Image 1: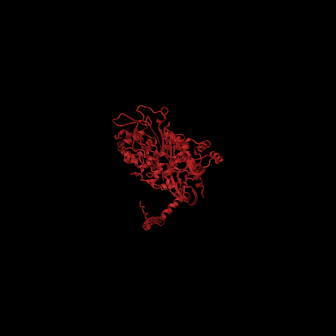
Image 2 (image 1 turned 90 degrees about the vertical axis):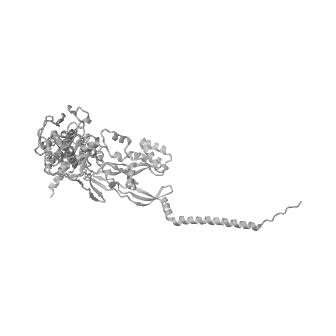
Image 3 (image 1 turned 45 degrees about the vertical axis):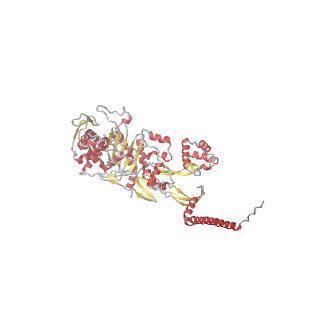
Length: 629
């Protein structure tokens, strides 16, 4: 058998194959290397600035700093709203080994309730684990002392100091000042729409109502910033640069806090409102609405129980009665109606109406009763104001007609906003034929016009509107815009508030002002005047008009007895006035709800007491002026 020959290896072919493979691998390596070089060039040359910025962002963090809120003063420099330091208990969850046990121990130590714990849990879920979360928003001195003694037992829990809004006069100024409260989702949305949300990056509260809400932009200030170095987890290592915040501007109000306090004392527990205003420039010196509530509840975090109590109270403490309360004006608008009648030529100074104690529309059986059941006899415009004769005004209103009355009364500010510098205001209702058709799709009836003559029917006003309408009378047509702001203080400079006036009421015969004003003066000075008894013996001159407004209609044969009916059905007592008669300094409006008595017996004595206080407080000033060299 022949043996097979062994094949000799072809080294040349193998070498050529190896060479091709090496070249191919080298091409791949060079290609990959070129891609890497190109990518490195792109990252380190072309995109250098971009990645440097992103690197700095990972290393440097900008932390916003909240500005101090501006302070609020009264006209005499007394502080009405300030910022006070408080202690809050804050937790860094990452540093707490057993959070649930820690919360239990703190609850036992400090007396925390479930609502506070639930709020902490909600706040914790919004923050990162290494950031501080508030557990107790405002610690008492006793709580701070108890925690400080055992702080070593609670790693990751600390006491922090911050500023919060404080109202030293509590419920005395709530409806004028308003309050600040925590920023909610609606506030955030509104700030975003206005494009100013960045200015609130470090702010926890915002003005909600009153002056605090209306002048939020001035009071808030400008946010500051600090640049801090952080690690990869966002923890602060050191501060690099600080741009301090700019504090908010301070406000000076027209409010006289002593007059405000006295007005609140006079109202006491009585539901109602008192307004004292400068008739010339509209400066509001006092604006009380009762009942009220403590604004510090909102500034420091109101509980669910407290808020529910305010919301469900049948006395409506959240309502600002001075600017939102809708009351029938009753007889307080009789001087303005007299001017309308004189201007329209419907009556003259000598016109007389027989008052037997009631009024009837021809062909109608219903009798509209006068407050004096046996009547006033023959009555002219002067007597009608002094003695508040209803029959005279029933007759006048019917002759004028509702549209004429409405057209004139709009000029005094009824049925529209006064423009006072708070957001909480109602326009109330100045009815007309068109208004009733639009509101109820019903025609206007003559009987409704008769009731309008004594400020009843659909006609409602706010006390602030009455203050403006009385100022129009005092100014003989000038119509001021009421305001709470006196000046803004900025960097030591006091910038006075703008004094606004709305179009004046212009009469064809200016003597008609004198007729109505003379009647208002005799309401106080004449023995037959409805406010004479209240102001007897006063050391100053004054004028005014009483009013008693029905809140429930009385049947034709029904007798009204305030002591026998439910409180909510009792009349409202009202008074509008000014003092002194020559060169008036103040207009005063008082409304007392559901009282036993009327404007002359309830509201006018309140006005007398407050005006006595006002002029007594001015006596030292007058003495100093008189003795000046």
